[in-house]
Structures are given as C-alpha cells and as structure tokens.
Length: 397
Image (cartoon, rainbow, N blue to C red; front, top):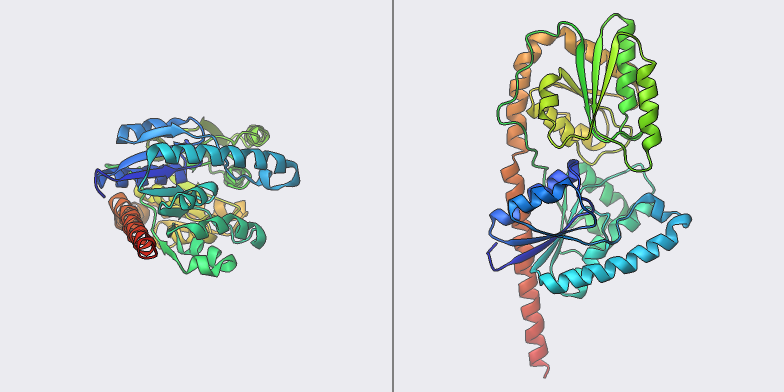
C-alpha cells in the first residue's frame, strides 16, 4: 500500500479479547504497508490507545452491532433504531475519510459492506465467527451482507466450512488466513517439577459458553484424590452476565480446602499469569472459530487442555503438548491434568518444540502481510472496475 491510500477499518468493539487483538494486528499490517488507517469503533475501550500508538486515527462511530438479543422480537425496535443510526454514522465517516478501501472486522457489523458498496469503495470482510451448531437461518442472515464484499477472509477451515453449510457461493470466495498470535519474546520455562499445588489457568470471558466453571469442577475432582490445585481465572463477564460471575464465586467458595480460586479480572497483558501457571485450560462448550488462547499457551511454553470441538481442534490439535477432551466433561479435564502432572519430565522438553511450531504457523508478521495483500488486491481490483465503468460511460455518450 502507499501513503496516498486510506483504509477505513471498522470493528465492533474496543476491548482486548481475541478478535480485538487480531484487529490490532490487521491495522498494524496496513500501517506497516504505508497506508493511512482510520478506525471506526462503536464505543471507547483499551484497544483505542493501542491503535493510536500504532499510528491509526480512531473515531467513535455508534451504530449497529448485531447481538442475539436484537434478533429476538423484543429487540426489533432497537434493531431498527440502531440500523438507521449506524447508516448515518457510517455514511458521514466514509464521506470525511474518503477511503480507498474498507476493512470490516467480524460479521457483527453488517452495515459497512452495504455503505461501502453504495459509495463504490472496495470492501474486505474478515470473518472471525463460526457456530456450526447454530440455526442455519440465523447464520445465513449474519453472513449474507458480506456477499457485497470484494474479498472475504476467514480465520480457519472450520469457519470456512460453517459458511459453506449455509452460503456455498460466499464460501467459494473465502480465503483462510490463520491468526497471527503474539507470544512472549522470552517465555518463562516450566518449573522443574509440579511440587505442591498444580497451578491451572483459564483466560477468557467468564460466561457459561466458555466454561470456566468446568475448570473449577475439574480442580475439585483432583482435590478429592489429594491433589491440591490453584485455579486462576483471568477475564470478566459480559454486561448482563454478572449473575454468572456470582455463580462462579459461590462455586469457588464451596470447593474443597485443597482448591483455591483467584479471580484476576480482565488483564490487557496475560503473560505474567501464563508464566506463573503449570497448565492452561480452554474448556469451551460452544463452537469456536479458532483458539487464540490455546496458541498463546503453547507460545508461553505451557501445556494446554482443550475442548475437542470446532476451531479449537484446528488450533491446538497438532501440538504434542495439547490434550483434547470431550465437551462439557470436567472429569475428562481432571484426568488430563493428572496425566500432565505425571509426565512432567518429558513435558518440559515437548513444550519447546511445540512453541517452535506455533511460532512458524502463527507468526504475526505473516498474518499482517496476508491481510495487507488482500486489501491491496481489493484496491487494485476496485480501481480497475471504476476505470472500466468510466470508460463505458464515456463511450455511451
């Protein structure tokens, strides 16, 4: 890309969870290519300062972010209001920024492809969501706006297959770009032996779908066998899910004396917690398009226990230090935690090899370059299309 080119990059939030971190890497790649990047997000959050430190311009653009609550009859009036507000906001930002391309991060902001198409600007959609077990009709509605996009990127083969199930024409135009996952430059080695309590780490949203309660349940099962366990939960609840946070605290309080649970809250930098852990657990109950947390564990020289499902299988399945468990089975998690504890000596050598493999597969530099290449291709294609359109108009006069 060139300094004369502007990319408008739209994202549905400003936190620092998985898709937010990938968006940050996408913006970094575009800026490294020399483009001016204008970022539109619907609300303030910690991501904004990181984007500005990269050199991006950030604007707050309240608008439509699709949540399941909006798709129920009780949410339809709000859906209509936010649609009209979002259309106006997106149109004004497009008019001010005059972008050469629009990069749309996730399928939950469906207005941007529509507005970009109306203004004859090339648009690239980057899909980070996939729920194959969900309603085909709902998935079709979520993916349909991105038929307007010139380029469609997906973060895994599982995401691609989920799209193919409901919109084969869209799936045929997708390309897989594996997430670029940033790890610590010098990770802390595993301790010499798991003496004392086994230190188990969970990182992510505190929600029923993500399954942090399963980690506490697995720890309680180990404690019954006389194995003390220290569980650390890094993350917080969604607004409206505070009840689940309270439920987790009650579960922790009722656990055995051999189980301690620390609620660390949301942390923008998780590596100190990874360094202090023996094992990371990713116990999702739902389909995941990919598993950044699993890869982060591997990059941090830690074994990882992962739910054997969807994109998590794709993210972690090839590593010798990853253990797959059936969904929603705390006993299977405790079995794997015990097995890891018993194979500690060989594990310390295996985590180094697994990290080397992850560094190769998920290099941030490769991810940034891939996103930049697709945006550049869309810009070139859009320029050619506009030029051909102008020629046709001129010849018809």
